[in-house]
Image (cartoon, rainbow, N blue to C red; front, side, top):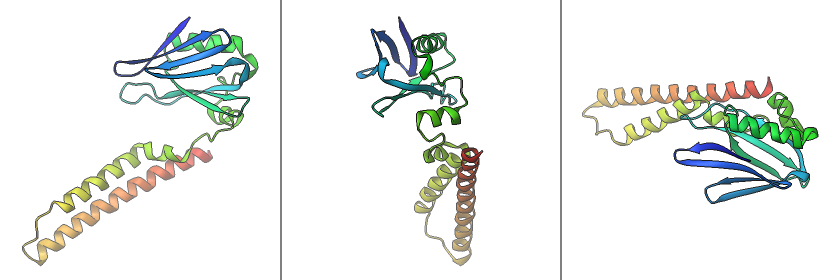
Length: 179
């Protein structure tokens, strides 16, 4: 049986069982996962981005290798795939565990450092800082001291707000990592 997941506009990934192997195919990319080597598997559920799935089906193999594939756990095909995996690999199933516990079973970091970059506050802060830099580079030469001082204060305030947003996004992500 073939299980389909839409991963991008006009791009669909498919999961198929071929004997004792799970094949994941996305365009020309193909990942073969030998079921006999699967030590553990779990779903890293994440919210969709622009309507596209952002969750991952993560496999830890006996060789120590880690395989990550895109999945939308809310679709009927994905649920059928997970049920089929549970039936074939009941001892390796970590899909019912909370993600921090499943990550520990898989031997991965539950909240890697780069998640802080995708926190909404961090994204807004980075965008604001970049826009501020572009605005500063395109400013005309001020006519007098007061105008130069006003521009400098404006750029400084925007930079401080941007840095505050970035730091608060990182801190919120760290708090989630610890908690």
